[in-house]
Amino acid sequence: MERSIKQYEMDRVEAARVAARLILASGTTSPRVGGVGECSIHIFDDECDIEDICQEMEEMAEIKKSWSFFKRDAAMLRDADVVLVATSLRCVEDPADINCNLCGKLVCEYLKEEEKLTDDPDVAFRGPLCIFRAANIAYALDGMMSQARNLGIDYGVFWSAGAAAMRMRLLPKNTGFSLAMGISITEKSPFRDIPKRYAEINQRSMNDRMIQRLWPQFRSIYS
Amino acid sequence: MAIKEMSQLIGNGLDRAVELMAVAAHNSFRFKDRNNIKIITVEGEDLEQIAEYCFSLGDMAPLAARDGRHLAQLMKEPCSLMIIGDTRKSEFNYNCGACGYKTCAELNKAEEVESLTANGPSCMFKNLNLGIAANAAASMAHRLGLHCRVFSTLAFSALALEVITGVDIVISISVSVAKKNPYFDRHEFWTKEHWDEIFAKEFPTYNRGFIGAVED
Image (cartoon, rainbow over all chains, first blue to last red; front, side):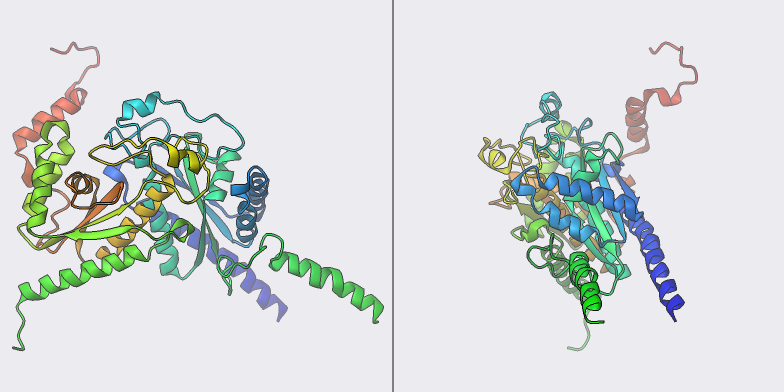
């Protein structure tokens, strides 16, 4: 009996790993502006790697108030089976040269001359970036989401995790912008129905406090 | 009348399909659940001015000229152009730095730079929301079996011509029910001589056999 449940647990995680690769395939084949390769997608399917990213996110959450939701994101992402990070590799050094003015610099030559933001802790992405190039990441992301939906897999999108992975230098060195998607194969999606104070009150902390902490006391007193 | 002609079926089907694309774009994933994109469709005669404008950009933007010429041809069969737009300022308060300003407040205060293509500087996440909406619409078109291609050039023209107003950043999805897919392998646009000439100009070293040769 117990062994079959364990087998199910292992198969469930394996399914997430296989699905992550199919999601990567869909994200990779989604359109790119002008057909120019720009994005790469990286799979983190080791729970220790995911934990490292979550801890970095929690550290970033302390940096400024507007990033305080990074903690909640980390709590959600800890329940993900696999994390995929999509990157934009050309948006820093290689603007699209179409003078679209999305960045507000009128022409690409001016964008190239513009000084980037300094590498401060409170800067997630060192802009100004070529927004026209980075828009490719939206197509990659929608390709990934579309595949996850087709496969019937729960997903959540987190720019916080993308920024954390970038800060940890887990991504290619040309990366200027990145976004992460967590996928989960569980009966209840960890990315939906998120109550308030989720960073402190979640499945993990409830289990720790209600079961691991109180139950042994109850057991020793009332035995 | 119980019999419907093919042209009528296809015309009605296209109208319906474009509505479904709008629904897909409208309901697509958004960062921070922001949903104030603007969607319009342009069909028939109104497309003509966009095609002409694009084509008139000529040497300044060969890509736009190509797309204008393409649109003029596309209009001969039933087609539709969906244009999706959004404003450029950030309401996310993510303060991520991707736009080049440390905070969203600084971006929103920055002087607006107008141009024919888009008004900048714009928020990265606004652009992502827009791109995701466009991809969702294109994905729906694909599922419905329409021919489809996403164009920035046509959207930029629509913005410049004020076909779509009240937005700063735009993207367009062109769909067609032509007999053959009009969006890929558009060889009819150029003669072999013209193609050879352009290729030789763009990739001059391709036909060289020896790297030390002096070019004339």
